[in-house]
View 1 (tube, one colour):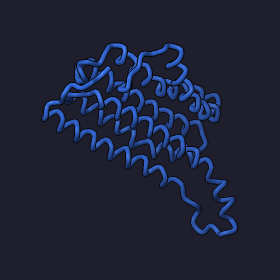
View 2 (tube, helix red, strand yellow):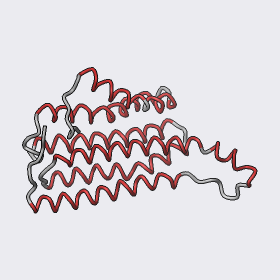
View 3 (spheres, helix red, strand yellow):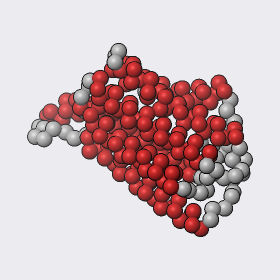
View 4 (cartoon, one colour):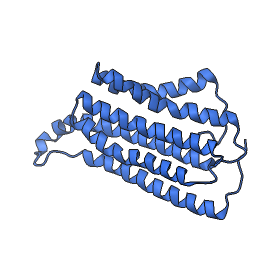
Length: 211
């Protein structure tokens, strides 16, 4: 489906500012992740290999968060490829979404420094809130007719279903964390598989502008 509805100059200007702010916060959040990874001060040269091995939990947390922030950025970009207008509600929802994004470096640091149930729950809750808010942006924009008029119901439905997979997965892992925190963390790897599986099982209609 070709989406080419023109944006009015006023809406285009505001949406451009919204995207500039969003991209800046995404870049800031993804950069802050690396600040959690440092070798202990005073590490001797001979101790560097062992010190690097000891950093593997931080490196794993960094990798997971980098990928998740990247995926949420892609979702955001795709959403605003078809969002043509704005209102105050959309602006506030976007700010709420960005708040959860900028919180990810903090929850990542807690997760890598403290291997306890509370850190896993905090991290999963942070990711789930970001995902649910991103889904909320999509639902709100489509319900308020802020999107391209040529966007079909199938694409709207696909956007909702696919956007919900990650936050639902993180939410389910919160309950699992109270049984086994490590198992809950490993379950996050299944979210990507679930995303592909749902797409294949339900054979959701898609196009170049899919969310």
